[in-house]
Length: 120
Image (tube, rainbow, N blue to C red; front, side):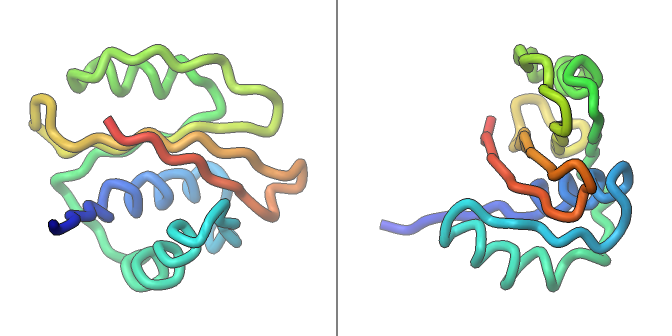
């Protein structure tokens, strides 16, 4: 059995999150898989651009939900509590293509961000 990992939607969602949080965040993983991703993929790809992937990050859950719905992913996103944001990425012009929703929690000073990744 083989495993396929699609990393660029996650990378682009995190990059979009850095647009609202500020550059060079210290991302905090929740498990070994995320730690490996941050170390081996995100660190290497952080400065790349992928025009085929569209991303949105916002402190407002409705912004993220609208972005996803407009791209064929009608998903309910609960309101974010204080100091939470969401980021989403989808492959541009792809119906039911790979999508990722990232819900994150930050410290009040935005110094660390913890991730929860949901694939669609």
